[in-house]
Amino acid sequence: MAMNLNIASISLLLLLASTAKVAESGIFDIQKYGAKPNGDITQALTRAWKEACAAGGTSKIVIPKTTYNLGNPASLQGPCKGPIEIRLDGTLKAPANPRQLKGDGWITIGRVDGFTLSGSGTLDGQGATSWKQNDCGINSKCKLLATNLRLDFVTNGLIQGITSKDPKSFHINVLGCKKLKFQHVTITAPGTSINTDGIHIGRSSGITISDTNIGTGDDCISLGDGSQDVTIERVRCGPGHGISIGSLGKYYNEQPVSQIKVLDCTFSNTMNGVRIKTWPANPSPGTANDITFKGITMNNVANPVIIDQGYCPYGQCKSQIPSKIKISNLNIEDIKGTSATPEALKIICSKGVPCQNVKVSNINLSYKGALGKAKTVCENVRPTVTGTQNPPVCPSH
Ligand SMILES: *[C@@H]1O[C@H](CO)[C@@H](O)[C@H](O)[C@H]1NC(C)=O
Image 1 (cartoon, helix red, strand yellow):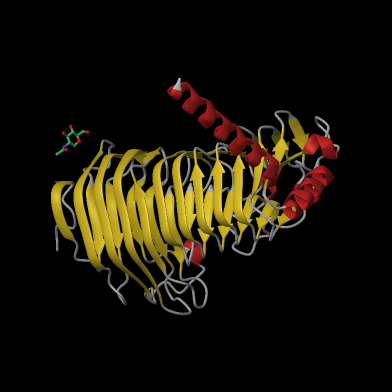
Image 2: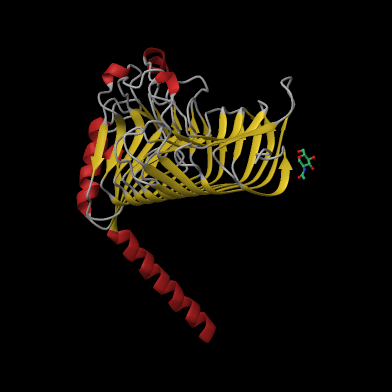
């Protein structure tokens, strides 16, 4: 009997605890704010956000499993009184005509501490029309179109389960964020779509991206200046341009990039696998250090591993002036699979600031095409090489 009593009192405690939790968290279902299937929810969503943000406790905005239009940019700004979750199970559609969506963000979350976006829903940017119109692939001064999801100065965030589809430009842009996790996210657009980077991170720290599938027309993940303590693991990339640090050194006074790990990722039919690119002739010096690429599988990747310090597309720079971005403490480890070109591994460092403390271990990359055997290309670097070397790594050093 004593045992039964114990169980009863424990259940009572649990019941009390869960009631308390329900009482302190508010539910903000957008249907209560006038959202109708296939209708425009710009007002419903912004009103739900305003009230949730002001409510305090944990607030949850619910977007049920149906299709809605979000015909205008939604700028959902904090600071809020408590943590906020958007539970997205429905599909949100952007207007197909890019002129109907002003500005560079479709959905923007700004200055929130404690933000969750979760669910099985989709952000559909309907970008196909804009890819035909924009020339951002070849024109650096092109007009920026709306990114599906912008996270600006968000701290302690979680993005889980959702899908981003066919954005007009980037899928997700992360700026000035701290402690943000992406888990089980799906990012999808055709390989031929223009400027559709998957997740771009800049000036942010404590970011992890794990168990995420990315197929898109540009970089699967790109890390701009000021990216620090970023871990990318178990990400599948393809089609796309790979996972890229940079480009770095185009602008004055860029912030250092450091503590970047790309672990246990798979690249299939991508232009690049793991990459670091820096411009030559930089307006000011910079650094990229403590970078690990480990446990990577390449399936038919054009440039499986590429460090390129002479990145200068469309002749936009004085390529004879060496890069001033110093790369150091770089580990390239356990890289296997197939290369689509003979150049399986390229480490082209700057003549001005050669790469320092580069370790390369266990490389097993094969090339089966008609252009000869797999090889490595190295400049201005003297790596420490251990383990398997297929092909031989920087043999002339
Ligand atoms: C390199 O990869 C090939 C083909 O995937 C495999 O047969 C071979 O055992 C690997 N070599 C080493 C040393 O891991």
